Image (tube, rainbow over all chains, first blue to last red; front, side):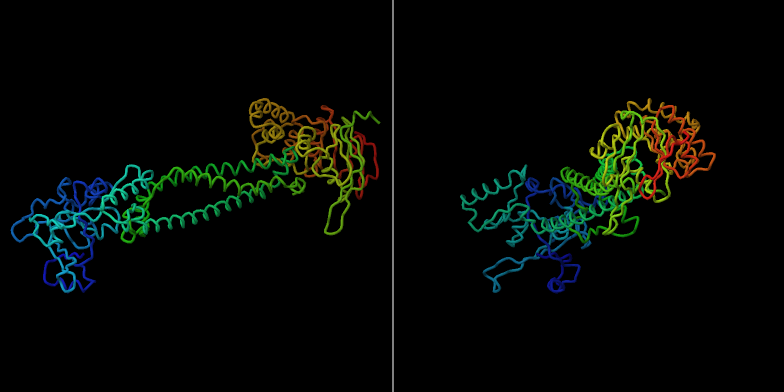
Length: 373
Length: 240
C-alpha cells in the first residue's frame, strides 16, 4: 500500500523514486470504530495526539474532531462534488513527515488480485481526506499505520464508490482480535477453545494458527528480552565492582585500625567479637547502600523520562533518541519482586565482600599489631 | 615462700621458638616464674633478652611453644580462645609504653573500654551510668578531672599514661602488667605516673609485673628478675 500526498499524474514516477518525501509505504488497517476499543487502545491513542509531557494539547488541529465518530470529516470540510468522501486516520509520525493536517487529502494506492488482468493484479487508487491522527507511542506503528473504516476499505478494494453498498463478495474480516481480562491465566485455554470452535465451524483449516500478542510481536519482545539480559549482566558486573570497592575500603580500614584491633584483643576482645565488629560495619554499609539504592533506583525508574529529558537538556546530549527507538518514551516497569531480588542480591554481595577483611581483622596477631610504633 | 594459694601467676618451663626460614630461633629457654598476690616484680634485661616475648606469653597474647602459664589457678593456654580472652579481660590490666589508647574515644570512653568488651551492648547500656561514675572516680584520683572529654591527641604523654592506667584498673584485675610504663615520658612525668601506679597497686593489693630498663625503677619493686638471652640469670630482692 502506498500513500501519495498529492493527487497528480506523477504518481508512477514518484513510485519509482523511493527518495521522494511525497510517497511512502503504509499499512492500511480497516477497523470498526465501535468495536475496536474492545480489543485495542484505539480510542486512547486518538486522545494522546499532540500532548506534551504535562498533558497539554499542543496541536489540536491534528486531532480527530469527535472521539465517538473518529472518521467524521473535519467540521469545515466542503464535501462538494469531486471531493473525497471517505476519511482516514493516520499515525502521528505519518502526519508530521508528510506535512499533513486535518482536512488534507491523500491518495492511497494498492494492488489487488485480478484474474481478468494480464499481470494477475490491478492497481487501485483513491483519494481520502485526513480526519486526524493517532499516537500509539510505538514509533513503528505511528510511522506507517493508517486506519480506515472497514466498510470504506472494502469499497476501495472492490473499486466501488464510497456511497455504494459494500459488495457482497468482499472480504470484511482478515483478523479478529481478542482481548482477555487475565491474559497470563487464560491465554492458552482461550487460544485452544477459539481454535477448536473456529475449526468446527469450518471457518479455518489445520494450516491456520491462532497467535498470542507475544507471538505476534515476537521479534520486538525478543529484542527487548535480549536487552534486559545484557542489562542484567552489566548491572551484575557493576554490583561485583561495587562489592570490590567495599572490600577495598574495609581492607584499608583493617590495615589502618590494625593497632586498635590489637588493643581490643589485648583488653579481652575475642576474634569472634572483632569479626562481628567488622561484619557489622559491612552490614550497615550493605543495609544503607541497598535501601538508598532501592529508593533512588525505583524513583529514577518511575521518573526515567523526565530525568532523561533533564539530562539531555542540561548537557545538550540526546540520550534516548525517540526517532531511532521503537518507543516515544523509555519503557520502564518497576516490579516489586525484581526490586526485592536486586536489594537482597546487593545486600548479600556486600556482606560476602565485607566478610573477607572482617575475617582478616579477626585473625590478626595482637602482638604484631601492638609492636612498638 | 608464701602458700601456693597466694600465687596469682605461675609460669613453668616456658619455651618460645620462632621459625625463621628453615631454622628455628629459641627466644625463651624454659622460664619458671611465680608472682604472688600483692607482689611487685620487676623484669630487667638488655634489649633482645626476650623480656617483651615473656611479657606477651604471660599476658596471654602469645602462645608459648612449650610450658604452661597458670592464671587464676587455670592453665591459661589450655583454655579455649573465648575463655582466654575472658581471662585477659577480667584478670589482667595492661599498661603499655606507648599508651595504646583508641584515638576516636575520649578519656572516659577509653577507661570504660574493658567493660565495653566484657558486656553485651544491652548490658553495657544498662550499667552505663555506673561505669561512667567509676571512670570519673578513677580519672579524678589520677588528677584528670579536667580532661574527661578530651581525646588522646589532646592529652600530654603523662596524661595519656594516666588514662591507660585508669583503663587497666577499671575491672579491678588481680594482675597488672606494665611494659616500660615510663619509657616514653620525661623524668618528672614518669615519676608521677609511677607514684600513681605503685599507690594503686598497694591500695588494691595487686600483683604487678613490671618490665623496665631502669635499674632505679626496678629497685623499687619487691623482687627483680634479670633476663639474659632468654634465661633468668638472677633474682634480687628489691627495696619496694
